Image (tube, rainbow, N blue to C red; front, side, top):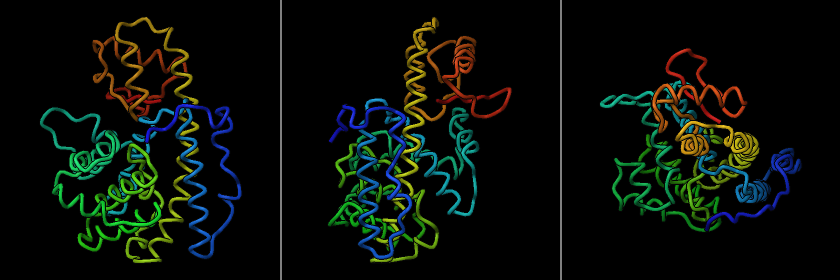
Length: 294
């Protein structure tokens, strides 16, 4: 289903105030952690339905965080700035490298509505039948389904952390009625959790989803405020193509001026103007090869 465009939470200041009993309670049994993860996911579901939350931008930012975690799990730490550079500064014919490819996988996974074909585009090394089989491995509640998919992939392909996380998040999205993958599990699970099986893995997934849902809610609130400000200052922009540029910033974690639908000088001038207005941030701290984002 598509998130309903109504205001279940009245204002942006309220969005990030996830109930304290969800964040402060420590579940001891699997029943406890299942209850807490259900509450956290329910709250996140409501937040995702708020009209001010830029959903595509949120998914892209969460994809960056998931990629950062997966690269760290692989033993090749790369922080967000390095991942952004690996993808956004690619020239025609260049290869993104392992870390950049990891990030591209997550970006492709969140771009389109959940389907076997869309997931195959994100995971081109897998066969459609293999993706379908793994995606249908899970049964029961949403988190149980996601944990079962995660376990099924890791049992058959122990080194396939990224496909395992992507497909588990896809199974979770389908079970919750979400149109798109929302990266949650990778950010909350630890390397040791990936060696767990059965109830121990389900319990780890429940705990991971509590922490990652809380972070996703906070990020959604921050991006909603920033997106609202960007939309408010957009009428002040006079450059031809500024409207299309603003839409790009509202859907992407980072944008290089060269990617905007404007001449190079106009694009750089527009980015500078938006930074002056407090609507964008320059993400690299460099004088050249800059990237901008909400």
